[in-house]
Image 1 (tube, rainbow, N blue to C red):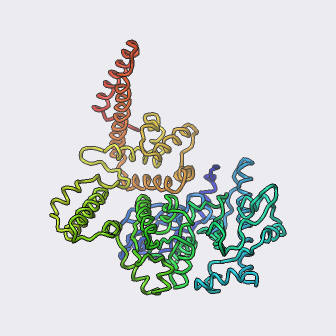
Image 2: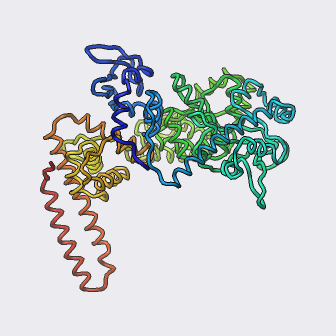
Image 3: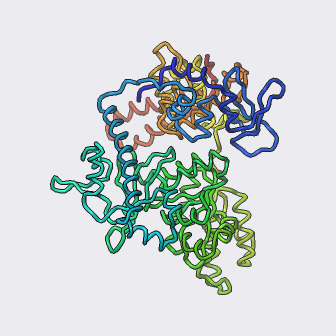
Length: 596
């Protein structure tokens, strides 16, 4: 992907009023020659977040968040680097540069834009059909679900007439081609003839967080199949990477009105919640929750309340979702709706107040898992009690937090009467959860993971040392894929005679998660301080640690394959290599190289 020019980025930063930008999200007050406010990235009551207008950065002394204008927008709006630059450019009236693209890339971008325009026009057509007499079947269905005109308009609901060419003829008349409409999934083709993909269905437009119509869901009226039909994958839509109503969540977040997101299973659950005044909801699109959707959620909230159907399938889906959300670093709780009800049924039967009580009483992940394990068992029956205890012990074995294991082991003791010592003995101990990027050395020197992150941070944030470092370390010295990608990029561009900027690194990284890792490395190195001698000493120790690891792995690989070789000359050659690596290993263990 073409990079944004450094000169254009400098102008973007110069035009951006950092006080005004951050002040639109955070109340800032001047104190001691600095601007201070409560950090938008973590909860606090006493301001520890400061903005340095002259040097163009912000820093929180509470949570350590640090960055420039683009970094702030990336965090607040949950955008990638290029999207954040576009956001700021639009804000300050600066045109995005015309980047060179090959013909295929230009054609792809042009088609994607035509698909967005076609979708917008199709959404308008479907909505107009719903409001006309021919939309009576759709209105009758929605009225039966308690969905009136106001909610129809809010979600842009529509109706696809029971006809083969209504949408096709309308959009062809607007100047779209059959090829564009087929690529958008609005038309299907058979035997060289095209026809409407959605027929006799209530239509649910799927809107991106930025407000574009990217696809549609259609609920069939009558006995047709499938019951729900989604747009196929297109250049602007993938149902495994999209969520229904996430555009509303983004709006609520911008207003500061999104404490959590309620995750549901279907369109009508979200619409039923909105009908009752509950707007902070989203839903998957007829598929199980995916890792991509979890990462998308993480852009907007840190806490999710799973509110799936209360039947067996919904419980099973909620258990799976808990694991995926945890992997994406999203805190999750679960609503256990009674009598197998779905959220829409519960809201219609009990109202908003009762539903919000269910949200308030939602269960922590382990509490939900315990409740599922207990379902259908009578703890007064010894066999059921033992089976329940064994299932719960297995759940605790899989829990990373020692505090959670202790808390729920004590609960299991109260429920079953088994001794706490026996429960904990069965549970055993588990490895601690993965820690965030850390760079400071312990008294025994840096661990391999810390050494790797430190070396990667120097590659990212110290161009004066990066050129030297890539002559010593190779991408295969890094286990973390982003650290390895960083080393490859710096190595490939080390000889071009220009420093590699933070902005450039963020742009070439593949996606928000990689960009976030790079920012954390840079910020962690900045917190290391201005002790250059200490930094170089720590870097020397880190290099030694990584070189020792590389040599040890090479030696192990040669040793493991030695027994399978029958050629005496090859055996002798490998033994010499192993001995040479052994000598190198001892040398690197005994020395701390000077870097820079």
